[in-house]
Image (tube, rainbow, N blue to C red):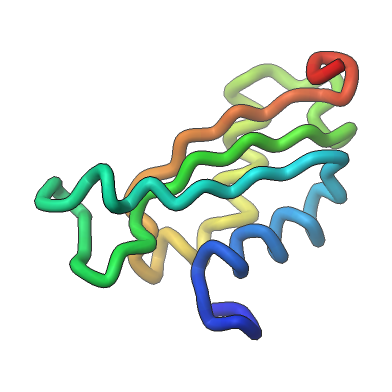
Length: 94
């Protein structure tokens, strides 16, 4: 999905392009879900995100999650199973 070939890298690149975040952490937690529904042996199915972006100003928690999920929709169609999102404004992160 990305030039480096990992879903993790693609997620970071995509969110950088869509949100221009001040801070972004993409954590692959797939190993914690081995044997669970949606898990694959090769991993890259379960991620946790911490995103700090001005794009979230004035948006509810649900709206923020929808923005992130919409940006990452192609990944869900290609095997991303679960995404935990912490989406904050710069003021909230300070």
